[in-house]
Image (tube, rainbow, N blue to C red; front, side):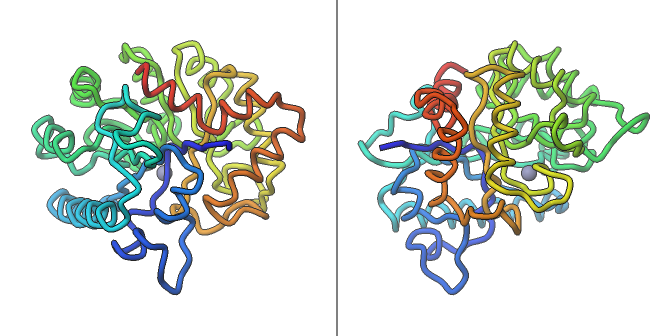
Length: 312
Ligand SMILES: [Zn+2]
């Protein structure tokens, strides 16, 4: 059976432990642990901290972290991935792996490297430097033109340290100049957890063909996201739009460089016909129907991300 791997969702900041562990509650989220276990091998769980002041952001992060620990214990069929080299190889067979990620490092403005060490200790392995706003590390995706001054000196120093510490650095939400400076600085391949192709939909969060090529040449990986506004300019996206973006990303970055970065529970709407994590097989079918080889579909649906993480 086809297994999936997804590099972005915001679910942990939306659900309480019982909802997450059992999938109960009046409002149905895009995913919960029972649905994940059916077909997902690895799911990134991002902690989006809403640009709160650092002290508040840490409190929120710790509260969500405790919720996730509790949900993991209640569910019993998932485990947190601590060693990227073990992606796709859970400690206990059949378990779904969760990879903890922070989206926007504003909370480290005061704590810096010591704060990053605390995140590592808590099990976080992926660091998204930015949400859309600028922060102490540099410019986020909202900065354009002359306002886009790229990474700060502190940001450049932090990137080198975090990479050496073994964090996966996520360039989703970075401004163009931050991305390019990061590309020049990083020794490891470029990783963008959730974005689409600017050539097909000119949105500030999407990657240009030049960025896609650089990502591919670095041995990097992009998670194609399901945010309708990134997929088409009308904002009324369909499955065919996701297929279109995936094919374009593969063409520019290469067959090994593309996978899934849904943004489940981070977007209000999904493309028509998709309801959540249970809908991944529909996308696999649509890719096959569009003429992609079965082996390539499997790689896009999960294998590419697992291999990328193991080799990072
Ligand atoms: Zn995001």
